[in-house]
Image 1 (cartoon, rainbow, N blue to C red):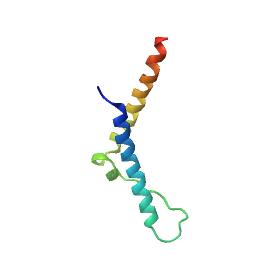
Image 2: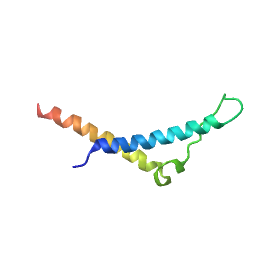
Image 3: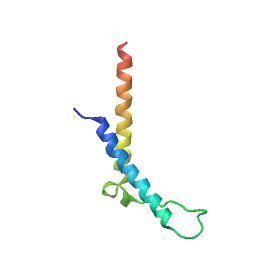
Image 4: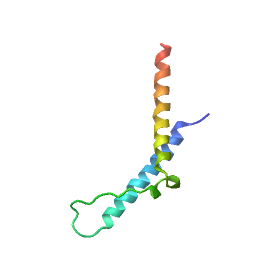
Length: 75
């Protein structure tokens, strides 16, 4: 049986890593802090493809929706 909680932890950990990396890059910049912009890039994601993370997030949402919807139909 597939455990959705493991997938949630995996994707969440990767997204936390991406956000932390971008935050460190902004923190290392010198000069005025007004107008610092985050420059996300594909290299931060798995295999250089952010679409994989997006599809996994969509899959997780779909699975959670089914887990909530099916028990409501029994009653």
